[in-house]
Length: 322
Image (tube, rainbow, N blue to C red; front, side):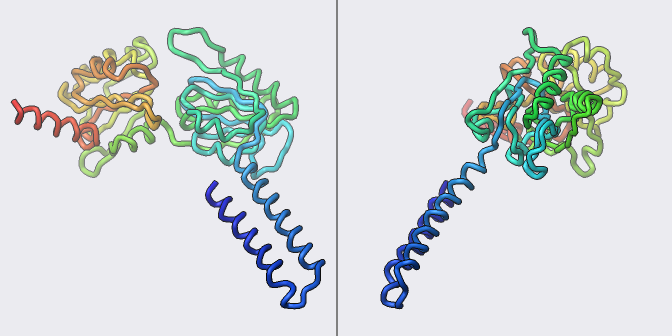
């Protein structure tokens, strides 16, 4: 908004200068009128630019899945009816769409970038609560695209990392709906960066594994044998409810129970929270952060994170006070 005010001031200054210095320079009245008209057109252009920075969206689908998947007409591709795009979180500002499906992970600040008359449709899923099935979401996406609207399917990370973006892409292709994929920042990378937690580190963590374990039975079915190596950083998506099973699987695979571990909840949002400790206390850490979404990170690199360092300082202060 500040740059818009500056531009209006510059336009006003230019028009005033034309009116003030026009007569001494022998300029005739029509020139003044042109200067005034130019100023008014300039103000109009600035206002249009400001409005264009808001994403023109007709409908928004939102839910609780991790990544964003945008289905709609991207600004760079014009306004093609029935055009679709798959996009990750952070790329939303580049789209001019009229219909958006959003997830709970999207904050009000992101949604505020949509046009005022955008239709917002919740299609998310919450653990333990009824929600719209994936087949119905797919059907609604195609239905909206075929009405000629520009549509966005909005999620909270990268559409192809545990976000069912691949399923939705295939369904749209089968329905002859053109789709563009725009990558986003997946939860593991965004949350770890916020916590100052390097997922890899020279001579310390040369391997990185992403795992999905929404339920305890999911964790029990994972082959943990390849994750017992100390050089491996394990990142578990949707692991809040299965933290105990994740702990048991890693320790059974040979991971040291004292391995540093972190639970990062609601990462990159204003209410984000981190809990750090050791692998054997992973279930307690998960309980400490409260509601999700959350990821679990297990590996020596956790000890290099900002929350870990803060916890060490707090413990040192407490010992000295005692």
